[in-house]
Image (cartoon, rainbow, N blue to C red):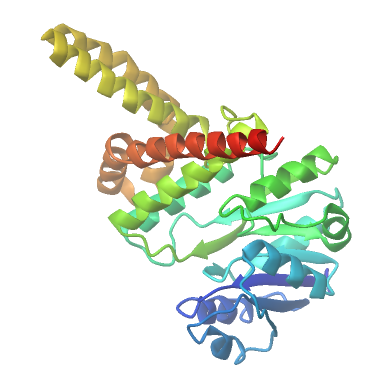
Length: 332
């Protein structure tokens, strides 16, 4: 029979993907589960799509955010284990079986899965992002956080924890939740066999916008949490080194041009070499996914373009954190 699972899905205007998400769940090789979809005041007709499937639909009347939607869904669940995914995620046929297997390990850990290397929309920018997240989240068996796109947690533990933070914390509410769980003594464990594929729908602009936005919120949170330099999933040592190397190279180039001394350019070589060495495993993952041409283009994008929005987002995050700190000081 297996462990009874409650699959919790927050939905906001997910009409383009929620049907595929639910279709995959109900085609699962595992059968001891329920699906609870919490609709957060969608305006695109997605509740009508959801109602065609044998799942429980909970409709909110006030726009509340994904964290509150997940918490409400968890409260409605009856399973021993809660499995959180997103409305733009598609489980594999054996995903729920693997969640059950991890739950039966009996170590009481919060278990995380990740994205498949190839996303549902296999275009360059979406695939780059999917590989990047897959690689970053599976580097360690004991990760810094468990992402809410594939998170399994015992219902009793979830209720004791207080759930996801409902204050406005987009993108990183699962990071805060994971850190809170760890501080209370709960173990986090990554199971790379638990996979969901994701609809990114990324274009060049959307990829850059996502990098900026995620970096901004993550930097502001990390400053508050005092772990800015930690190797934390997608906020990895590789990415942080890449951004530092990028701006170091800009400074080297500017100095060379200002002083009209081409020899200064030679200082770029050790910076490039160190950056490539630190990111070598990520580059290998890119090659393993789609071969040489894709890897070549991805490495160029990662080294020459991606650091700009990440760096700009980090600066915006510092400003955001400083303004918040200033407001708090003013209230004292």
